[in-house]
Amino acid sequence: MIGRGIVILKTWIEALRVTHWIKSGFCLAALFFHGDALHVEKWLQLLPVVVSFSLAASAGYLLNDLLNAEEDARHPRKRKRPVTSGRISRGAAARVMVLLAVAAVLLVAGYYGWGPVLWVLVGYLLVTGLYSLVFREVPFVDVVVLGLGFVARVAGGAFALALVPTVWLLACTYTLSLLLGFGKRKGEWRCLETHHQKVGETRKALRGYPRGMLDGAIGLSAVLAGGAYLMYCLQRPDRMPFLLTAVPVVMGLMSYLRFAWRSEQVETPERLFLHSPVLLVSVAVWGGMVVFLV
Image 1 (cartoon, rainbow, N blue to C red):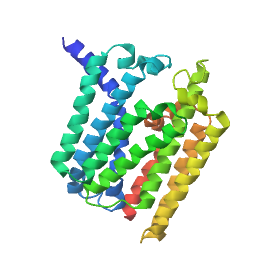
Image 2: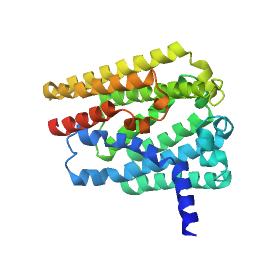
Image 3: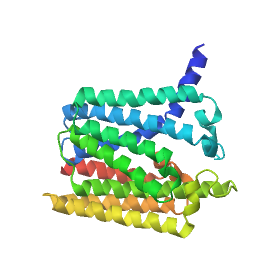
Image 4: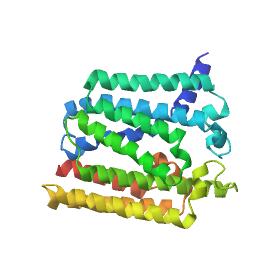
């Protein structure tokens, strides 16, 4: 009985893609850049919005699995997902999806009230829903829409701290999300090639991504992300020492590009740190420098 319960729990953890909750770390951006990372009460103030975006993300993943089960069934890895493989019924997945979305909204409304944090979360739910329903099949537009989800996390975290995110901080977030999004498409392309499958079988939008153009989009997104971060550093009042944080940022971007142009590992960026020590060190050094300087 206990063993069966553990199996069911693991199945739901997989279905909810708990490893992807790391993306909710974008909610903490304002905490670090505003110099509040060493204040415990600020972390507690952000906890509800981090949990809410994690729950909302899982609801979006379940919706995506329900709507795209046929395509996922042809993917070398996605076909093993609980909903696609039938380990979790479609009815159970739909009920949990609604429960998670409602819980996320109620948590934010109960803690932050009917203010900007709630509307950002609701906007995030709408965008992820429209992505699964419509934009997932439109090349380039799919990545552009997905990037809004990361911007929503940063904005939600800032509003939770009663701050207003700067334009350049949001620009950094959005261009970085474009880099990750185009990298995921390239990783899926390479994965299908490795398994000798036709491009477009698992995602119709991939048919609209010529190989050269996809590589160019990845490179351009990296340049824009680096440029946006430099501009953010320059508009800060402490720009002279803060510019030093651009060094690990450039190192991290170069490390990511190395993987994006030659490895299918970028299809799962949440696990990329396991395969790129340079990227892991770059992020760690950058985070330490930001905390120290701010």
